[in-house]
Length: 232
Image (cartoon, rainbow, N blue to C red; front, side, top):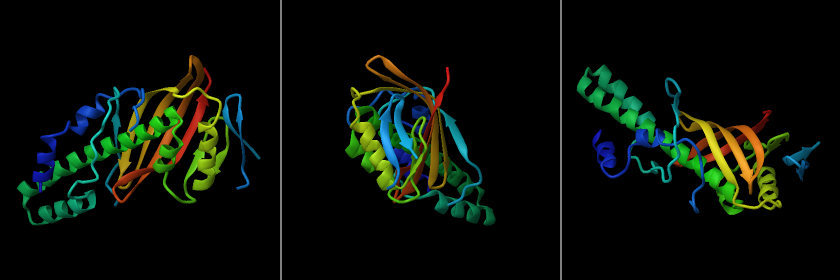
């Protein structure tokens, strides 16, 4: 049961090492009634279960987090196997499964951070096509841009990002992320951070951001982005 993760660790950096390397995001090269408009401060608007959620405090950024969608087993299967091993008093096998769960959880957090970085790469570069591919499809998704109200539904959320990416900004933007934390609970995860955005020397200020993702067919998709200005 532990052979697959052990073999994987032989050819890619451990998720733990990557998590402790990341502190700020500097960008990757290329990795219906709501009325929207661009204002002075940015976009404006008129009118299965685990026992506990773990978090990782991220220290420094790094490009290229490992993809984990190809892992042979998922958390639910491992949890069932762990309970079976305990019931059968096969404690040696139970210990191996616990190790597999730890590795899988760390890799899941690394893949969630990679999805978060893809979002900020699209934002940084004004890459609308990439932004379209990052978001989950459905009425449940929403975005709250700084100083704006809630925008709900995939089509309207994408309209808001069209306005951001087509605005008279000089892309690429400089986006630094501070105080990054990642939390995973089954197929839901979220990343919290402090955004520091600059455009050719002009600072947009600091925003506290929460990015919520859902895993669909092994891939993380964004379903919520909420950014709020911080008064300095």
